[in-house]
Length: 245
Image 1: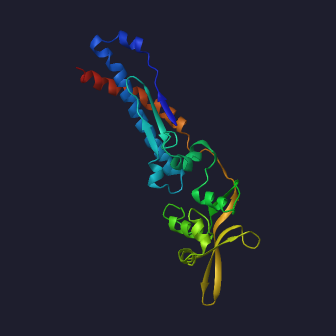
Image 2: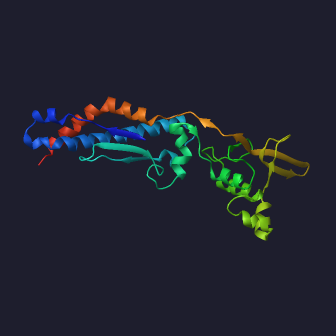
């Protein structure tokens, strides 16, 4: 989170102003803070583009500004959902990029753990045989096929029944789980052809990864305030005085 809070010496400023302009200082300060917040948000997005590997539009739109008012001269920039207490899905999925530490488990990992394939301290990463989208992520369709083949996921009860629906799903692709040894532990896919068959790795099990902080939102905010606030306040105050009634 970035918090932009400006402490202004109103007493000193008021001495040099006519009474009709005094009330414009909080208004101008709030406007300046909000413009600074917008600039800081844009710089956060620029760093995301530079430091993330093919970030999705969803990720690039993941920040939210809570603007200041003349009665509360503080603006904050959040990662959506988590700190606004609406949902954990978005902020938890990228929060480690801003604060370091371990990333939150994906739904795929949750279902693999729930089905007994991995432990609570294990994760999976895409391997060379995974079908990736333009952003480098495994497609939802392939994830669903993997879960179906392994009889895991939210539809696990159907997979266990041997129903026609279950058998049809499992016949789509030859995904299977390797316990390790000759084939690394994880999800593999077998492909049959006239002369035989081949296998390729799709998801490989890894120990819990620890991430370094890649984007320091607080440092970005401080940099933008130090660089731009004085000139932005001067512009907003001039506008406030010019339009004062």
